[in-house]
Image (cartoon, rainbow, N blue to C red; front, side, top):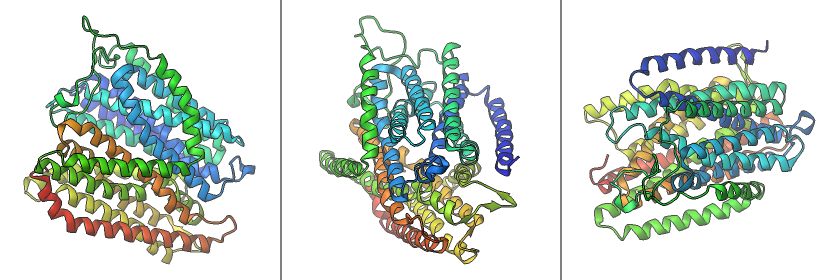
Amino acid sequence: MAEPYRVMLIAWVLVGVWIAFVIYTNRKVHPKALFFLFMVELWERFSYYGMRALLVLYLTSETIKGGFGLEEKLAVAIYAAYGALVYLTPLAGGYLADRLLGFRKSIIWGALLMAAGQFTLASSTGNKYLLYAGLALLVIGNGFFKPNISSLIGKFYPAGDPRRDGAFTIFYMGINIGAFLTPLTCGTIGELEGWSYGFLCAGIGMLVGLGTFLYTVSIGVLGHHADPPSAPPVSMAAREPGDVAEAPTGPPHPGAPPAGSPLFVYVGTLLMIPVAGLLIYQNDVMDYLLGAVGLGAIGYMLYLSFQYPKEERQRMWVIIVLLFFTAVFWTFFELAGSALTLFTKRNVDRNFLGVELTTSNFQAVNAFFIMLFAPVFSVMWVQLAKKGWEPNAAVKFAIGLLLLGGGFLILNLGKAAATAAMVPALFLILLYLLHTLGELALSPVGLSLVTKLAPAKIVGFMMGFWFLSSAIAHQAGKWIAGEAAADKDATPEQTLDLALSVFNQVGLFAIGSGVLLLVLSPVLKKWMHGVK
């Protein structure tokens, strides 16, 4: 048995034991629905990250090995456009679930589309039409699935329920377990047995998730929480500050207007598939589209800010400032799926502790460190808060950027220890460790902060723009990854020097951004007017 398969089996056994422990110790605290939805999300993330681990490798692999043999610059551009659309489509998917489909139909429809996308990719060898169709199916399906399963969990915990944070911690664990297992499974199978088998494995994972959800529905543990809406949603003006839009559920109310037929949604979805595929193919269009939308949204947010009193206006300015820094963070962080993957393939000695790993296996490192350190950060912030030492949100963002930059710069130590232009795997793992610590410092703060700072009437708009910044970050990453793209005939020494020159610039820019944010933090803290 090949060594990566041994690693894969060990990981599955350990994760299986851990899942059983988590469910057993929490079974009397949380409703059954949480654990079923935990498993659904685990398998969906298994499917998503399985494809993410393989995509750039598949696109750049030689045609004789079943790939497309694309230039690296084109491959990372396709990856960037796909990632940008993954963050855009949930805005529409969440809206349609709120207004028409409900959570159950949206999740099922999204899962079917994503499974179809994975199976289409599995059969796309040598056929670019199937490649773009598969990516488009994944993008559209993600839009229906991703925002709604998270919202569904919130339905089981009323406002103020002390169990709510614990429930989402368990759910977040499911996300990272899926992200941890799939590079070790789909990635290993795809690289060793053939790309089609890797995508097939990801598609099977999505079907397992769908089957788990259908079983959950059939035994009735979801109650009416996943039903289609039966009454008009509450207007934004009627919501309290910090409330998030949710779909009205439950049995129809007497005299309520009909929810309407979802048929046009399904037909519209099918019509949007070629549009999404074309946007990925003509990925330069995404630059202009997202640039225009981003500038327009910032301008509109600034205009709106002057419609509010001073305190609310300045809180909106904090969101706008932090949007820039969060976009910088995710632009660099998401190079893991493009430039860093190609760097791992070309210039990393993948033998670690005597085990020869595959390129995609290293994408499991981030999720592993999240599972390891997320509880540490949770306890750390609480303890610092008790002593009055907890840093404000802007400082946490700055810490995240400093750690991110340090991760890229540490590769210079790897170059010094390199043999034949191959950097020891330890230094790549240290990079992912610092990136993960930066993610834990920054990521959990953002969404919570938006709900606290945004005026109640526009919290939905502000939240949507926060997700839009992630789409912009994905697309912006293509330019950086493109700079690190190497010619096919470049030597290992040339590719190492090229990659490190780009990563050094990225690292220094991230550190500079972190320092700038530290300088700005007293002003931003003042503008927050007591919000922490």
